[in-house]
Length: 84
Image 1: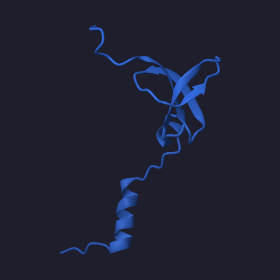
Image 2: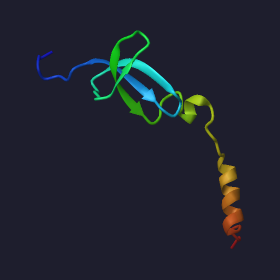
Image 3: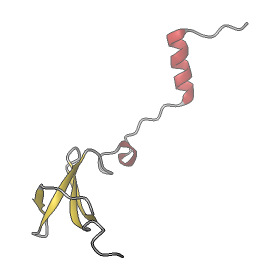
Image 4: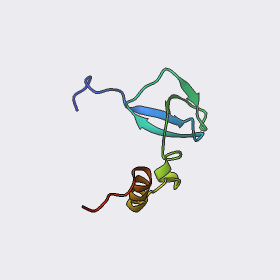
């Protein structure tokens, strides 16, 4: 790798405020805010809106609506199509 052209790559804490979940990883992202981690060291922290701890797909709270339900709802709302 060429020196001096790549961003700094170091430890960063990503924190999901909605799920009260945080994890330490390495990234090129930086932040002015810092947090003291469980190991006693201070790391930059980046607040994210959604993570695997709060995303409906990963938590199993995703709603699935079948196409038959959508068709029935459409027909109730706008009436059935008449045969010609």
